[in-house]
Length: 507
Image (cartoon, one colour):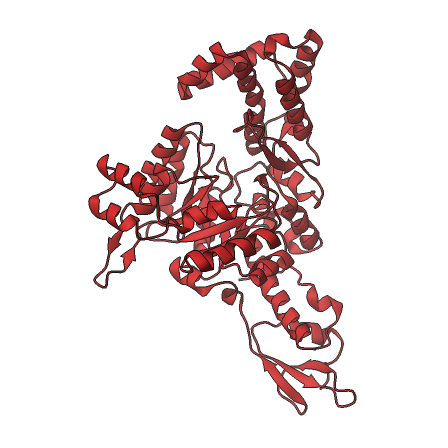
């Protein structure tokens, strides 16, 4: 039994997940070790396992993928056409980050996706809830359906809207056995059980009827829609970059899984938020996730559409280098997003704008010294110029905003402050010269966990951080950790470094 009870050979045996592991009782004290093959004293065999076997294999079968892994829809196109294509060709799934893009850019990127991935079904696009602009939400949904996007991920929805139902019900049909078949797979990203329940249920009949009467759904689609849940898959998002409720995965995922088992066990439940190293991914699968979704770590990938300077800043992040900052899209409501704090002054500057908004009724009420300080330290230009640019933008995008701003000075102030919040994300994507201190990078502790794990390995090199290598290593590491935890549970003696999977190039 050479190499069974100690040395590097034991680590190799423990981490060799694609072969059986043989548990062997030591002849002197009966303690369990490992052997590469059955030998005298073998008391049991732990079968091989593969990363493909993590999670729920119904997920991989339903979505034509090899691995139960999704690269999430980072907004402003950060989850780019190139990223989505790379994941599809690596036999995984990714969603294009359509949130925050104008329709012209959206149409251009959607056509690129359709052209590059003709015949592929393992890719999708995000549809984000727009409570301030239902017309835009509906328009994006129409374009997704017209383009034949195979999968749509719904995010930030607190209720079922007409756009959601159109995506879920368009193309529904029943086969010869009466089984209802959905043309477009629908994912729903949620952070609360009550929101999950909406997507686990059929859509409201009244809303379906209205869509049928308007000609947005056929009678047959309407009849079938009320017999199936809104979503095929529900992604439970714990503490994460960007908008987050900050809930721990170990609390919210089991609650939604329990609800799904009672309400509709056919709907698969995945996990997102905080998944930056193999231990976190293994933990998500151990909790019962059918699949995992990553976000923050993918911003550091070669394919992510964010500037090299921003990627370098993210690569320096630790698990505590994040802060909460006012959200540009829900500024007046007081909503916040989680962003990178290290290397940027965005969070503090955005918080200052929010405080001034709360304390003052209008821009005109700001003291001259405060106004001058904002122009110099935050905006980098005069407030009158910011208002001119803001007015120009909203007059084209949504003229009603200008009407409201003229009648409500406080709303005008909010729009001016949101010019900074909105542009700070664009500056990070584009790598705007002189604006590094203002980069808004949506980022959670997962980025820090990834950096700690990848340090000293090939994944520490920016050019090696392809989205597929990140995914494959996280999955392989999760499989290894799952395996060594199994062996440890069975009583095998394992050295501490058996639990340390190091990143390596994986084919």
